[in-house]
Image (cartoon, rainbow, N blue to C red; front, side, top):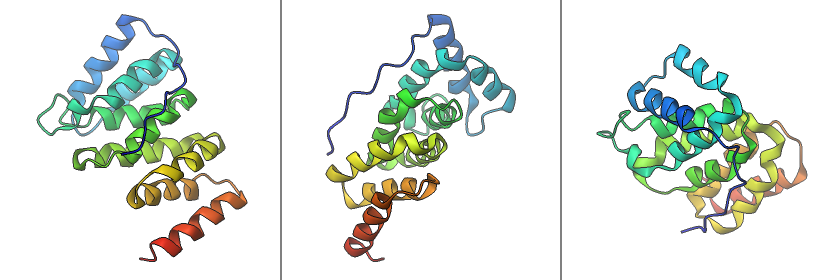
Length: 166
């Protein structure tokens, strides 16, 4: 199991903001309404800390959890739309989570990290060193989506291809 890294501190949010976000995401179900998405995005930086908290709440990944297991996925998606750099490490934690219940969250986290662009490159490269082959595949997919030309990306993709040619 990879070691968890301490994420940069997210901007503080007030209890009202956190509760409003929690209420929206825990009642959204599979599809997050565009107006609810817009309401959370309008909160800006104050939405980041509550979204990171929801992203990491593994009890919310189950189908019978509030939000039908989708609240952490919606949180990941919104963090990407907010370009929340303080969420990079928690999003990477979600990507390398090997639990079956975390697969949808993993996909949402991969998309969110791709939205952040070049700032994700070095953290992803650091994570590649201490994760399983499956997690490396996911991390390399993120590298391919970044739209960044860096020789380290090609090196990692070639190394992965040698290790896992299928």
